[in-house]
Image 1 (cartoon, helix red, strand yellow):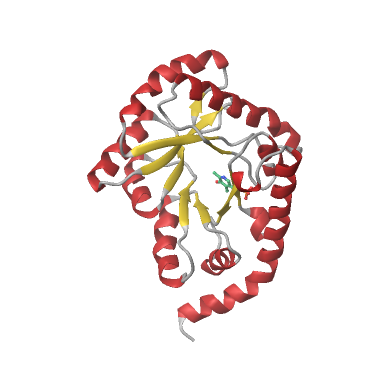
Image 2 (image 1 turned 90 degrees about the vertical axis):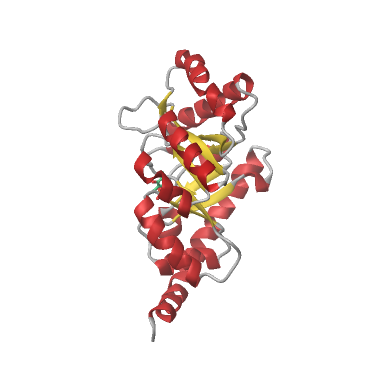
Length: 250
Ligand SMILES: *Cc1c(COP(=O)(O)O)cnc(C)c1O
């Protein structure tokens, strides 16, 4: 058997488990939307396939997921061409969700359709230059550290006092034609109780409303927040994109 048909055999083995997990997750998403009066279609699932095999990645696509997330450019650049060759279904949208070094920005543009983790104006400027050279438009989310944890990437915006200065520094993004802001992303502190994340998520939402008022020329609609342990709470607090890995694959 050649390598490609081996992937397909392995995919079949992964399918039942992944399908069952996805059904549970979609139900949780639907319930959270219903509870908070949100439309079903207002929350998109990004399946985080980092460190997952090609067979698992194919299986999640086979179950109807179209948004895939990777946190490292190296893995993205290996997986995307392989999936392009193997996956025969509707087009996949690849989300770069992990910290992106400026020197890898060009590869991120080659292999992803959107980046959730723009965490400096320097990186935004580099993406704008590179996307302009390619003549493409690259949507980005600004990663924000609103919890104040020292270990987190992102613009540090835990103090509301710092928001006005951020607006002044971000105003130049309005000039960009190739790197387009679409919203915000955050990671909540890792805790046992998902309720502990609620304050972080509601603060990102508050920041979104602040920015929408202060910089209405930019598009702030997306809120990427919530992972396997806390996506229900994130949806209740307004997430439009949830990034889920282990709950799908384990
Ligand atoms: C791994 C990862 C996720 C998914 O985490 P799970 O807990 O496995 O759902 C989400 N976002 C980022 C940035 C990640 O690196």
